Amino acid sequence: MEDHIKLNGNGTNCKENRAKTELEEFDALFPELVKDLTNIGLKDAEISDAIDWFKEVIEYNVPFGKKNRGIAVVTSYCQLVTNPTDDDIKRARILGWCIEIAFSLIVDDMMDSSITRRGKSCWYKKQNVGMRAINDSNFLESALYFLLKKYFRDQPCYKDLLELFHDITHHTVIGECLDLVTSRPQSTVDLSSFTLDRYNTIVRWKTAFYSFYLPVAMGMYMAGVSDTDAHSKAKSILLKMGYFFQVQDDYLDCYGSPEVIGKIGTDIQDNKCSWLIVQAMMKGTPEQRKILEDNYGRDDESKIKRVKELYRDLNLTHVYTEYEESSYKELKTLIEKCSGNLPKEVFMAFARKIYKRQK
Image 1 (cartoon, helix red, strand yellow):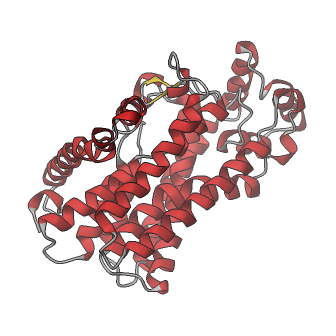
Image 2 (cartoon, rainbow, N blue to C red):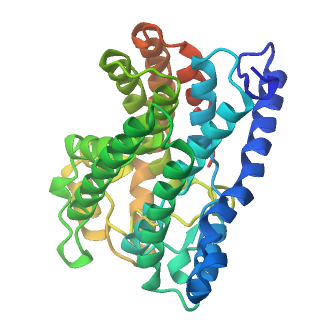
Image 3 (tube, rainbow, N blue to C red):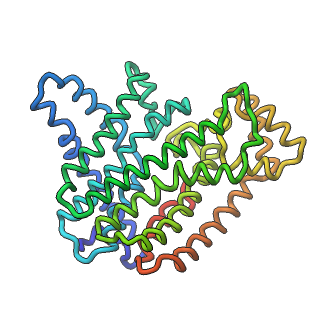
């Protein structure tokens, strides 16, 4: 196995350097995949305008994320096999890019009326885009399956990968629907539905399957690990990790710096069923819950400020810090107990990346 994809070297600096090198190798593959997706325009000149547009869609929306999901495919695969070839590693990176395409984010931003994504204007907010972004999202989904077919149709894992992508997309769409149904329009704010059970369900279906189980499961299938028991054990760990990640995301939406996290938090005015509002409803007095009902879910700076003041009164920053520490310990214990025959580093590498993250 090449040094640049090992994550179990000696010393923190060694791990960081190898991780940085793998990110560089991962990024270096992107232009080749863009060519794969746009070369059809060279053969069919009559659709060249569409291909030029889609090239802009790919280059604006795909390569600027943290790439935790994509890299997780590579590191998971390389932890599970002995001496992978250069071609094997390249295919793992291509799988990683299939996840990074993240076609649902374009429409997610539209439904949430988001302003920025990854430090710049959301795609639908750009001049001459608007509702065209819906079709652009469809294009990115088709691009994912184009790449899978091109590079994996002769591989034993092709069927498993296809079914996995379809299944996880189905889960994510259901989770998105639950999120939207729970976050009602401003005129009908009803915080009684903002329960911990509902929050747990939204996170499990919308975030945890796609962002955490999918990357590792892809690495497992590519490495020939397809037995149900192994995937069940991996899923139990990774769904817990996905929940941990979403709680962090909700906290950063309110308290993170837009310059660091790359977007402007809008959960309060968007009436989102976030971890913070659920905690506030659980811990607040009847009077405090009334304040939340009068101010949450309104796009009004004074009302947003009042909600944040109440969060401060309830000391939710301290509650979050305690949650992060206790949950990370629980996660490490779960990895020790439930990883089975799978290398623990498959999961710990992922967990370390998100622990105490600031973006």
